[in-house]
Image 1 (cartoon, rainbow, N blue to C red):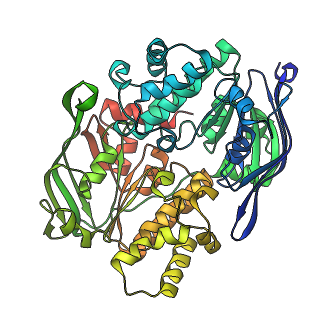
Image 2: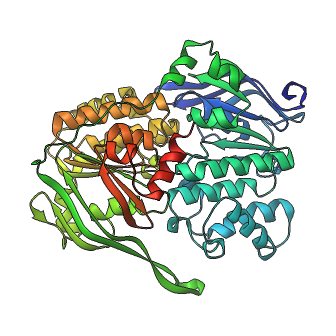
Image 3: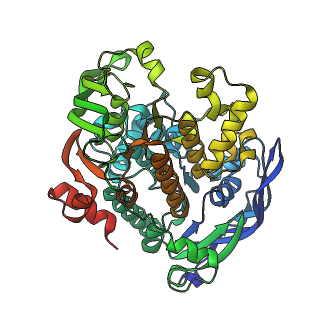
Amino acid sequence: MEENKETILSVKNLKVSFSTPDGTVEAVKGIDLDVKAGETIAVVGESGSGKSQTMMGIMGLLAANGAVEGSARYRGQELVGLPLDSLNKVRGARITMIFQEPMTSLDPLYTIGRQIAEPIVHHRGGSFKEARVRVLELLELVGIPEPGRRIDSYPHELSGGQRQRVMIAMALANDPDILIADEPTTALDVTIQAQILDLLNSLQARFGMAVVLITHDLGIVRHFASRVVVMRRGEVVETGTTADIFERPQADYTRMLLAAEPSGHKPAPADNAPIILEGRNVAVDYATGGGLFGRSAGTFRAVDGVSIRLRQGQTIGIVGESGSGKSTLGRALLRLVPSSGRYNFETTDISDFGRAAMRPLRRELQLVFQDPYGSLSPRQTVGEIITEGLYVHEPQLSRAARDKRAIEALREVGLDPAARNRYPHEFSGGQRQRIAIARAIILKPKVVILDEPTSALDRSVQGQVIDLLRDLQNKNGLSYIFISHDLSVIKAMSDYVVVMKDGKIVEEGETEAIFEAPRETYTQALMSAAFTA
């Protein structure tokens, strides 16, 4: 029974705070938490609730302006205040962590095989060549296609979901006692999520590993966790078995979380609405191999002959598994990657526009990136980040006018205007995503391509962001291309859906038709994986 299992991590009165120009921010306010051997405990709550900072504090991974107090004892050994050399013998071997933003955690200068092998060699000894067999096994376990080829790939050559799987492989490399999984399926499409969770389950059963799951996806919690801790504003508001939390929640906040789900229906624009952005027969090829490392040179076709037409006021949802070409298509439409095909923005043929010719159009064509942490400069304040485009496109604005626009943009995305004086690392993943949206909308563009804009947001905030994007669209006649693997969000946000696989469109049509009566086997599999209770 769970209650009879040994407690291997005991957290008492843990506090995490950050020193900021506006004073001390208390991220975690004295919480207690126990983790038992072999159990799966989920820590849930909205962005900014302190979920991730609790674990970062325990692991000694806080930013330079962060401080941790209290106690966190792993098998009797105090981790808070432990010297770095002693702490390094625990983290990466006995306690490991899957981080929320894989691109910022992976070194762009080393192959993924080398990086997965690093903790194996460090903690177990041996050579990188000897570790290669274990690395190949891990890549196969986490669902990386063609592991024999991908082992020598660099992070930028993988999709967001594939990079997340590399992080999972790295965390599992030394068969840890406790695995802390911070949003482990955020970047994964629905068909892969179940495989990853099944993998963690099997490893847990094999090695008796405990899993601490930090997530805002309550569907995953229901199927994967045995016990749940609900956090809000740095405090624990409720804890209990998964069955009790889902069937008999005691706190009003818990009930609100359970009730939150993207909803609504996006009406299609008029048939005679003008076409604002069009790509015809779009193709994108990437070079693979060659160069200094002696691999065979070749090309990989990421987008293969795709045509898409976006009307004013329309939202086209693009769905598909990781590596299907969704994000690459979005960047090609904005002329951000080399590609072939014909492109039009409004009535202008931009097919042959170079960087200089495209620059005046950039304020009209905005992109919200999938990885908000990697796209936000750590050296700039939030105010500087979101007003950066105004210096280029509205240089006549005074400092006071720019500050006023920053305040308006932050309020529109649901953030305190005082946040403009803080830095990105002081915010949760979901808050950083909202900062990225503010940076795009401050220029009042005509087209916004949103690449997984809600992937880091909890359900209660997703609805707010969807409502915000709808309001902006209705007010300004905006057009969106909404790229996501979250089909419930696509259904609520889009009036037209494009389904992609292996760089091609396999099915497209009005949202209701795609969701209610998908024709293609691949689309049917996506729908089944997303909406199976």
